[in-house]
Image (cartoon, rainbow, N blue to C red; front, side, top):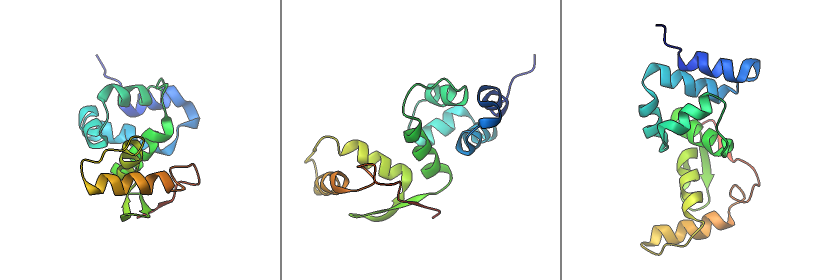
Length: 129
């Protein structure tokens, strides 16, 4: 029984319109494993599977940011911390939805993220870092 590779699954799902990052995600899964890719991105293996299969109903831009930060080393210029990986920026943006005063870094990032144009949809701020 021949097993279908992640790249073949992605191409079947997206056809000729496969986004470059989805193809990269599928390649990463083929080179290591879906579980390792998911762990590196901080998401579930099921989410990765659904994205590759073209069935993920959630925020694809979020998944793209996580992929590009973890696997392509894309960075953003954070007003509070300077250059940081795109996936780390996405993590802080998610945490900034609710103030946690557990430490000063959380408070600093809460304020910075809520004022940041990236968080407000003012651009992706990404570089090829």
